[in-house]
Image 1 (cartoon, rainbow, N blue to C red):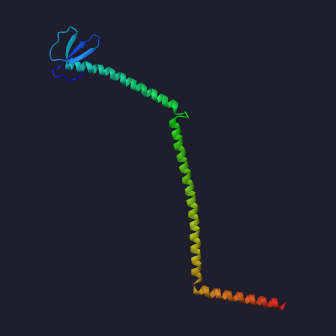
Image 2 (image 1 turned 135 degrees about the horizontal axis):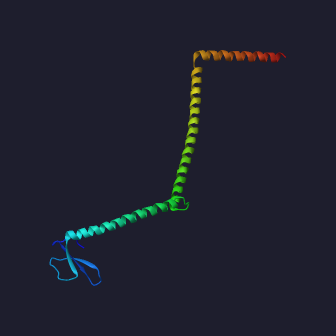
Image 3 (image 1 turned 120 degrees about the vertical axis):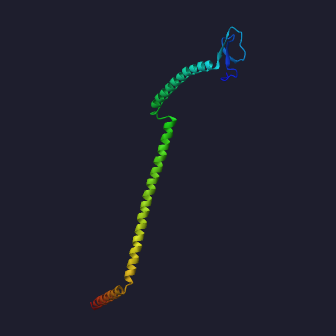
Amino acid sequence: VSTQSTWGFLTLMKDSNAKRIFREEPQVTTNKNAATITMSEFMRIKNSANIATNDDAEAKKVERKTMHELAQSKVKNWPNTLDTLRKKKEDEKIKKLRDEEIKRREEDAKEAAYQHELRRAAVEKSNEMLCLQQDQVKAFNSKMLLADVLQERDAQRDLNKH
């Protein structure tokens, strides 16, 4: 059905099956089953019919939304739906990743502690070597060694006398 007519008139006719047919005709028909209306009247009738249809459609849409929400509220606690299984799988994956991350952090902490201990031991050893390189320490160590040797010699003399 065309909504624009070049002539501005539509002819409404009834056929033998009681269907309404719209035809654009420039001439006036003499058929007693036909009525000619202007395009503006046709558009007004069409719009008023669409309003009722739109109201019905809105009511159906609201009803469908209500039914959908009701169905979703019933289904959300079911353990075997695809959505629930997908969420469960995602939660397990997240938990696995979280556990792996915790394990990696623990290993990193152990490795950091081990490396810190190695550094501390290296620093301690280097400090001791620096300390032993000083002249005063060298002299002290040599006097300590001499005292140990003399004490050992005295111990050996006492052992030989008895």
